[in-house]
Amino acid sequence: MGDALTLACEARFRSSPNPWVGAVVVAGGERYRGATGRPGERHAEVVALAQAGEAARGATMYVTLEPCAHHGRTGPCTDAIVRAGVSRVVIGMVDPDPAVNGRGVEALRSSGLDVVVGVRGREVERQLAPYLKHRRTGRPWVVLKLAATLDGRIAAPDGSSKWITGAEARAEVQRMRAESDAVVVGAGTVRSDDPALTARHPGADRQPIRVVLGRVPVGARARPAVELSGEPGDVLDELGRRDVLQVLIEGGARVAHDFHAGGLIDRYVVFVAPAILGGDDGVPMFSGAGAATLADAWRGEIQSVERFGDDVRIELTGSGPGSGGTGTG
Image 1: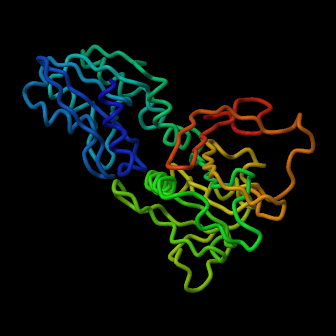
Image 2: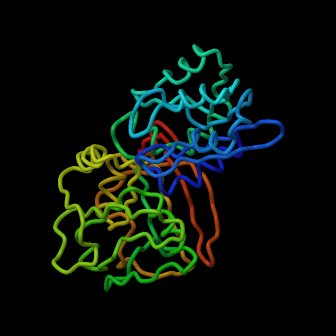
């Protein structure tokens, strides 16, 4: 299952809105591997079975997510597994998609296969968090990315913000864009920074949808972009209807505040640079009313701290009731 999890990571940049899944067929001491392709291409199970060929007969398959049992853009994976003669299937977790949701497990068991569910399931759930949230709620997974000085400023008083962080941190942001289905910024950020909002990452197999909250100025590098307005929750509902599984919010301070205040952020990623503006007139990370007292402050749970060049990336999620966040991370 560890191999399958690694393979799923490779599919992360291409498979959306399908889940990124890895599969391994173990037969005679050999391992035959597969990962989900682009939408409409083969699923991980079928790729692994094709590699295994006749060796799949009597073999064990490990797959991170429950195989599908319905006709979509491709045929049912369960049919392919049964035809190949696999005798045992080990599954990370059940797929909550209404078209699957236990039907794959039942189809395999009714065909006489031994099926085990739940192996390293928590790891699979973390890996597939954007897909799972979308299938369960209709909304995308929301990641807020901030780059700030040590004293919490995302821009100088004159509005300049290029570049707060160094090259290594900016490369990591490009990776985050590549794994996201949409990048969201406010119209003010487009006017002040004129960002291209493209994913310049070696693994990028597609470009995220560029979403601007407000009107995109004529000639802006962010064009073409989807222009949306309204409450943050309504924006997420609309993006969910467009099969967006993960949203990366990149600015500005007002947009960050509005999504945070609404408890809509699933994951916070803050890049902190060893730089200090040293005053109270720079642009803060959040613009708007905050907690009135310390007792009302949002409190999260740090998931990781990692150094990128001279900068530090802190990744955190809501820690549950009273945190002000979603608690879904």
